[in-house]
Image (cartoon, rainbow, N blue to C red; front, side):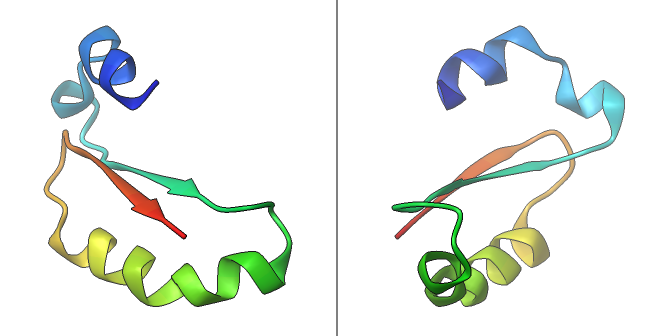
Length: 55
């Protein structure tokens, strides 16, 4: 899905980046361990790019 999204949207033109989070569920207990990886991805990710964070 992420790869197709990269080809469907011109993210650079929008000035945004996207972090896709893969977790067992959207419960805080499943997301909390990914917070460090999410923050690092947001710090390092330039506009127009997509990064995946997996848990």
